[in-house]
Length: 563
Ligand code: RAM
Image (cartoon, rainbow, N blue to C red; front, side):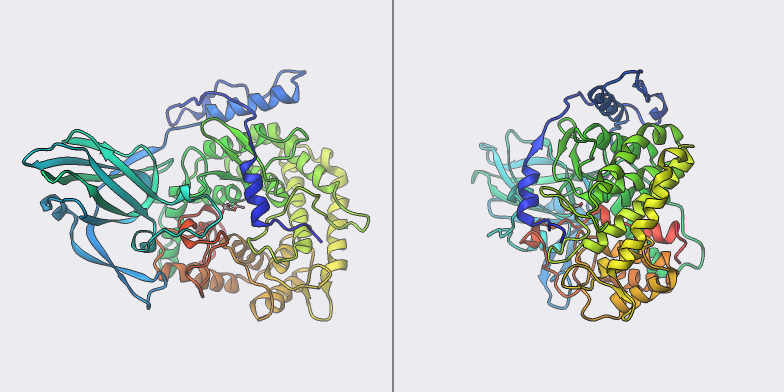
C-alpha cells in the first residue's frame, strides 16, 4: 500500500522550505533568450553543486518581466443570492463603470466593480478628496474576486487549513489626497469590492481612472480554431487559453491567486498546452532549469519550487511529479527541437527513473518510501498502487523516446526490458480478466485513477484499455471518481490514447463544459458538479479559480485535434 499524502503532512512539508541558492534575478528583454550568457554545458570536472548553481543561473538568465496591459472596469455591479446558479450568486449591473466618477463616497460606502473577465494583475486608481477640508488619511478595504462568492460572501470565520493570508483582501491607508494609488501586490481577479472604512467627517473621496493592469508572459489570442468548430468547443478552448495566459508569469504558476508557485505536475500540463497556444520555450526552459538546479542531493527533483525572492527548493517530493520531469523535457524537445537543453538535462531525467526504479519491491511493484508521497489526485482515500505503476511505465517510455531523440539510446538500453517487465507485472497484479477492468490495493479498489494510469502506462492492451475505461470508470457507478481537473485530464488523455475519442470529447464537454456553463471565466482548481463549496483545503474561499492544471482542453482540441 502506497503511503497516502495527507493534507496535514503536505502542509507540514510545505512549510519546510530550504534556501538552496541565492542569486539575484536577472531580467532580460523579451526576445533575447538565445543570448543567455551562462554556459549551457559545464566545464569538465564540474561538481554537482557547481552544476546546480549553473542551472539556477541559467534559469535566472531566462527570466523575463511580464507584459503589462491596462484594462478599464466594465460595470458597477451588485451580487444577488441565486440558488439557481452553480456559483450561488449572480451579478446584476447597477451602472456602467464610468458612473463611478459621479459618486462622492463617505465612511461606510462601498462599490463593486466588474472588469468583465479574469486576469492576474495590479489594481490602480486616482483618489481625490472633496469637502470642507481633507484633514485625515483615507482607509479602504479592498477584496478581489475571481468568482462572485469571493466578494459576495464573508471570508470569515475562515475554516481552511491553508494560511488565511491567501484570502484576497487588503486594508490600505492612503495619505495626502489627491494621489494615484497602485497596490503593490498582484491579485487574480474579475471583481473588486472597495469599502470606505473611514475618512474624516469633513470630506468624501472620489475614484477616477480605475484600472486593472493585467500581467502575463504572453498576450494576444491563440490562432483561431478551424472553421466549423462547434461553439461549445470554441468557448471551452478560449477559457482554457485564458487560464493558461493568467498562469504564465515569470514562471508557469499553478494559480495566480494561490499557490503562485511552480509545481511540476502543473508545469507539464501547461507547457504542453502552451506549445499550441502561446509558445514560449524560454519560459519552459527556465522552469525546467529551476527544478534541475534545486534538485535534492541525490538528484530527485521536488514537486514544487519557489522563484521569489530567489530560487528556493522545497518539499514535498511527489514521486509522480518527479517522474513527469521526463515527460516535460521530452515535450519541450519535441516542440522546440532544442536538443541542447535535452542533452544537458537528460542525465537528470534519467536519474529520476533510476531513483524510482530502485523502489520496486521483490514482486516488482512500485512502493513510495516513507517521507515521500505520490499525488495522482486530491482524494487521499484512494489506493494509488496501480496508478503509480502506470506513471512509471508512461514516463519510462518517454525516457526511451528522449534518449532516441538525442542519440543516447544506448544509455537506456536495459530499460526497454524493464518497461516490458513493469507492464507485465502491473497487468498480472492489477488487471481483472473476468470483470475486464483494473483494480488497486488489498481491497481491490476500482477507481478512474487506476484505469487511466494503467491505460496510459500501456499496462493493458488497447482492447483491454477500452474495456477498462468503460467498465471501470465511465459506466461504473461504484468506481471512485476523480476529485480534480488534474486527474480528469489524465482520464481524457487515456481515452484518446486507446481510441475512445468520442468519449474523451464527451467527458471534456461534461466536465469543462460544465464549468463553463456554471460561469467559469478561467478554469478552476477544483470542480465538483454536485457541490460548489467543495474544497480539499477546508474552505472554498481558499480555492483557486484560475488553475494551471485545468487549462488542458485547449491541448486536446489543438494538439490532439479532438474537435
Ligand atoms: C495544490 C495545487 C497545485 C498542485 C498541488 C499538488 O497545492 O493545486 O496545483 O500541483 O496541490
